[in-house]
Image: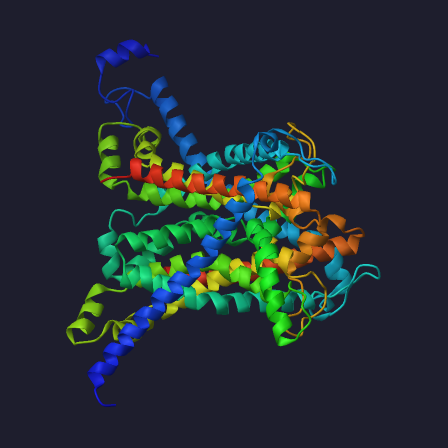
Length: 303
Length: 321
């Protein structure tokens, strides 16, 4: 060891280079996936592809219109199911977290915050745990559950059951972001409204929620982005359908399912359809992500 | 009963808008309606929380009840049995347990160094410039790509690569198998664990770091002796939560693991995970015990991921406070 300072500096530089290298390497798969999908997908996309039904093996052409319609129906329905429950639960959590006004006091004394934690009702703690658990439930297990609840009793696969499965997967993200944003709205705003004599429910609905609208919207969009590519819960619920279907009580096609079924098939034509479908799905998810960012930027909660 | 309108004119203070009782008047109609609405609103809020609890309990109970036939018929043999034979109604889930464990562990082992590098890059080295915001966005995009598309990409890109590697080192060139599945899995969980690691790195108190810098420490030494010891529990939680993700990941693994119901002897062999066996066989399962054995697999997966997630979340929560 001739020069310890030199050695330390070299080690520092080497470490920095390693970190940068690893970071760049982990970006490579992303670029590879995106480039590959766009290159394969864009050649397949044309008007015919977007406006016709898939054709049987051996026939050239065919499109994925039924899957696009199916995915849209399933996701809209899932959003309609998940949003009311998710937003009310989010309000419940933000209203019942008692240690809200005095964050600064909490940071110093641990025992105090511990007892405050204990003071929360068991409903609050159990439901909070429930949301955490729900977030971690594997999507395939949700598929099984909805199959047992909504498919087996009625004896048929249906779009509605697929929507319920996806609604389950959206719930945690809607609840979490509603709760987090509403907690950001300062106590003073609420107190001002109450001091003016506004009833509690009107304070929440007309003052607190509009203030936190961006976060709620953001959570909903994130939830949609998260579930729009989900395949596993749809395998046993929406099931797929090679024809048009607009009924929510019948099996319905969807983009992820069509990608899965065609990707594992041995036919070149079907692979092409799957690449086109992948292209559309990935673009949708990317656009949703960008939209989320814009929503956050435009209507940020500012206090 | 006083006319609403005239009452409003007489006492224009709180009777219509507020909760405060108007002096000298008994509870009017408007006030009653107001109280009713308040109570209804509060009840709705509590109800939504209760609905969540009930849903979770129902989920668990449904799984337990539906897997009862197989629990009764197979008992503990379900966990240590090695044969999965629907024809003779013998179901041992050990191959899937082992397969799930190996793929997830391997994916964690591959992804953690990369996730740590991204976390350090974004949280410590370059927290604010155009390049780090590019990396940040890229990682978020990576998290948004659906699992099924990773699987599809893996079939066409990763499988040939792995196959050529297998040819070189002289094992049977399946292409699909444990290694391929783990590679895709690791790509898929990098964004998740990277964002968690970045979160805990940014929570390291600045004065600790500055004290070390003031003593003449290099950045490497600050990371090695201040940041890493400080975030050790957070790192554990990040790895646990990523593991929970990896265990339940279905589609990409199903498409790439080869789907054979034997215990894999090496990482180049094909195998099966709990999630993939459910995805492949659930709709084809005939026979009561076969069907409920698959549900029991789901129950096992549910219990394992839930335990891992709860431990991870609690560690993170303790770290935050």
